[in-house]
Image (cartoon, rainbow, N blue to C red):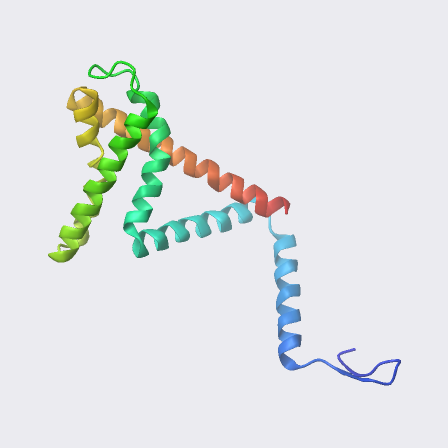
Length: 172
């Protein structure tokens, strides 16, 4: 019963907005109950990718700081035994990544100031190789290979986060 008088004799009616909100909430709940795990996974993937894309567009420096933080663990595993510093500490690697972040911020500021097109984004992924080469003493090919392996590991971390978000959405 959508409107009328209840048992106490009080006028009972729902406004149009209340009906729309109730129908929307009911339809959302029904749609989520009918979704499979793969649909939840796709939804979580789209939300994560869109969130990272929005963060990258609105705050590129914060985005890169987040990415370098996620990159630090795989980099540490690959660079902890290097010729120049035999027992590299994690804090020393973080300092190198902060230097990389500062390089990115400086390049981003300069390129934005001089209105250089977006082709720079393709080269930016190789920026950590410069300070890592200086820190580790490895040859260029090994430094670039380790950097690429670290990016693959970081991608796997992102996929793991995506699976965790999808599982949470599916089981909650």
